[in-house]
Image 1 (cartoon, helix red, strand yellow):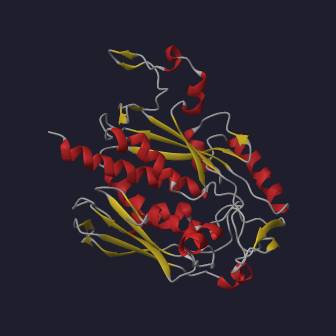
Image 2 (image 1 turned 30 degrees about the horizontal axis):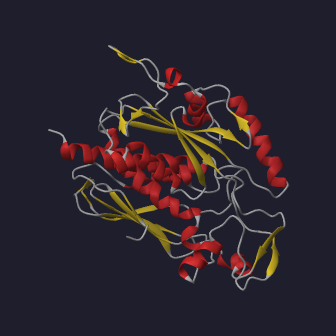
Length: 351
């Protein structure tokens, strides 16, 4: 099956290109009678919308969601939901100089090798703009999870080597980088300004907390909950690594340190990150996502053209300095999609 569809029971298929007429998503398997309207979807899309922070591209897309099908009188009907988002501020001519050049760090080379053709306008299907479709679908999944009081929160743990040293949940909404540490957020802003002036870009770490998750979600062997969460997050273009619970630090622990003791009142710790044997324990699920720097930079780089001739390239245009914080809500959406799918799968087998 072509890799444009995600999920088994709560199933989403995204479509569209960065500089085409629009982008969107089809959601199949959403239960009926779930209250949904454009405002619920728009609330999440507005968090991803470009042009809101100093690290963001100046491309001005309203990202206005239009529900085309699957909703009647404000409720889901159980039939496929199609959501469309029109592209209104695409400037394809800015990409003409790169029509035959492979931009380092992008999918230009690999798409050409796979398909023998590529849409060079803004990266086409490989563009981060595709993630708006995921966010729209994630908003529907989130509304479904809200009925079970399952809460998913993504925030910036580090940006450009500057890490948060404290955690204040209220601070996340009070600074443009969605960091839980206001002092770190101020340092992040200074760092972004300096790197932007140099024509370079930054990476960082997004943390995700899942609260209210019931025990028992996840399938044995290949469809483990942690495996599907990792796959969903790794399917986001800028993500290069996922940690769950103690993550890579577990490699330096002894079993006596890493094992979470079980007491009559529950688990004594949570090194497992809320998942054992691929199945949720009922504890908070903790994830950390490594986000690479934006590959479009003004600094001169070596590359080749489509005929293999050596070239140099400096990528001009409207680009993010960092995928953070716009990627945070994308991570949140992908987690919501995984959880909605596994919640439905568990209900299908539960007595």
